[in-house]
Length: 387
Image (cartoon, rainbow, N blue to C red; front, side, top):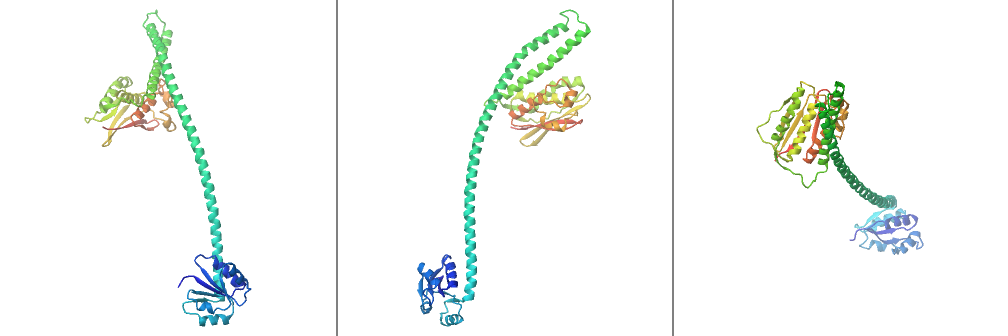
């Protein structure tokens, strides 16, 4: 027996309403519409939809395909007659049941209509949102292209600035060297005897010349590092402790003059890295000089070597000096930046030493970590990958 084959008995207004709802349900087949009135509204509607009309339901009861009868006449006698005569395979739903089924099916159809409307609205919103995203992506691509163009221009400008800086500082080296030579000649008495007031002025000139010479040297070094050829790093296998020892030894002259002690105990183990020996030496020297310059007499600078992992070693330079204000921690590696307490303590600084150290660290794929407390000192740490 086929599923979902229905016969409708009674085709008045109630039968018509039920018929319309049943036709909207997928998988349901309405085979018969039965009514004694051939002009009933349900009969006319059934004929429009090629549903067979009959005046007597006897044919329905003998059709083995039918498995459900809706009795929509509302007459108890017809319902009782159908109940007695129908085969047990056919289910029968009376007028009250048909009304309930109609209400359920009508609600179901309304829900379907609402769902379809929501689906259509959702699809439209998805289309609109997709178009918005496509427009946003197109704008983003334009912005990225503009950013790349601007980035290239900035890079070119930076390269030009570096070239100009190299040229300008080179041009300044000779005049300052000449001034220092003339100052030394005057102080040595080759231009005649100078009174004390003149000597004091000339000594200040020499001091300023020395400071500016240091600035020029460090500007040249920083410019040279920034304009390096990335394809030719000049790396080789280095013994890190040997370089550190040389840097410490070179700085001992300054520490002795300031009565500052460097606590450094070279380890027997070799720590080999791939790097540029001259640059690593400059890195350690800059960090040591920074610690010396901002430490008071009678204090100690500690150098701590710590093998953090099997493949890494950290070199930490710890001083007990003036420390760095917390608000300035993120700015100390900027070119020419000096905190107020640093200027007050050591007025001849260039503000380039830490910038050079940072640049060298970046060239060697590492960075400098800083811990500091105002008035208690600072610790600068660099971690290297071992070979």
